[in-house]
Image (cartoon, rainbow, N blue to C red; front, side, top):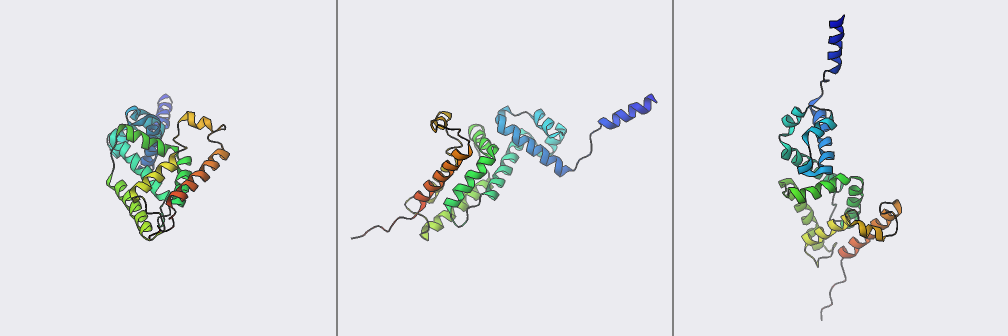
Length: 212
């Protein structure tokens, strides 16, 4: 009986077999949370594995070392951001509002980007291609007269990106100046309307210059 009981206990503690894809997704989600909170240097593989409920060895099997895991997390986040915030026909006004909404509901994306700039400032070929296609779409819209062309497309896009992050990344002291809760629905709605209007003003084509 004792032996049988021992075997039963051992069976109950044995790890359940998991689908490899599901395990990778759990590890990636856990790593996203860990890196967003602690950055690359402060993140711990043990905590990621524990959070995912997976064997630490599988993390190395699926992703390699911690640097490669960080790259995988960034690639996944960049892909999600690009998918959820498309730039359609160079419409920067709509894009700005959509990007603000996404960053508001996915704060880990902005935190990961900040950690990368601070700790591991590098980029991938797919990121460059993504930005290149957006800049080209903006340049095309400028040539067609749908966007103001007084600024280079790449500079205009950079400004719009920062505008979408302005309130979410503002200094705490500046947030306090608003006189209300900086993340209240009312304040966020006010800022969203303001940023959309700001983008509209800097991108709307002006009247043709008078020649004479």
